[in-house]
Length: 53
Image (cartoon, rainbow, N blue to C red; front, side):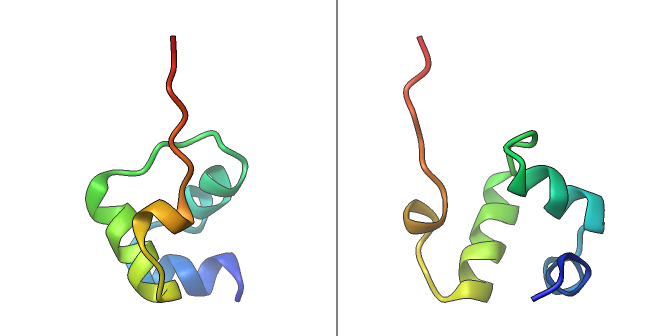
């Protein structure tokens, strides 16, 4: 799937998807849920949550 196609499905700009892929953007809960729904997985499966010190 192209970044632009995914962006259209979750109503964000293509650049937002690119930044997510590169780890340069932390999505809102709504965006994380929308992305998980597109891929048929849970938010926890899609994103890793590391404890920051």
